[in-house]
Length: 216
Image (cartoon, rainbow, N blue to C red; front, side):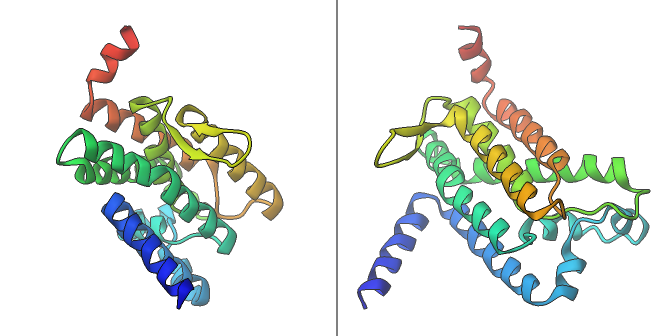
C-alpha cells in the first residue's frame, strides 16, 4: 500500500509539473515494451528510409520515436525525459500559458528535422535503419540549454548539481557508453546530431530574444 501511494504521488507530481512530457513518456513506455515483446511490430515501427520513400510508410517517422532498441535504451530515455524534458516544459510553462504546446513544438520539430535529413541521406541504403526517442530528446535538451544554460536540472546528494549546459554532453557520453557496450545496432549519432540541430533552430525561432542575451 505504501509503495502504491508513493508511486501515485510521484506520477501525480510528474503530470502536474509537465503534462505533455508525462504523456510522451507513457506512450514511449507502452510502445517500446510492446515492440520489444513483439519483434514483428518492432521492425515495422523503426525508421527505415527505403521503406518510407519506396513503400510510402510515412508512419515510421513517428513510430520510430516511440520504439527503443532494448530495455536499457528505453530506461535511459525515460530517465532523460523525466529529468531534462520535464524541466524544459515546466520552464516554458512558467514563462507563458502555452508552455506545454511550445514543448511539443520543440519535441516534434526535432523529431521531424532529424528524420527528414536521415531519410534524404539514406533513402537508397536498404541496410540503414534507426530507432529511439533520443533524437527528439536531444533537440529538447539543446533547446533548453539555450533558454537557461545555468539551470540545475539534477541535484546529487554529493557532488552538487548538473547544470543545463552540461546535460547534453552527459547524455551523449551515456549514449556512447551504451553503444560501445552493445556494439552498434539501431542507435546512431547522426540522428542525434540532427535532432539537436532541429531543437536549437526551433527554440531560437520560438524565442528570438535569446539572440539579445547572446549579444549582451
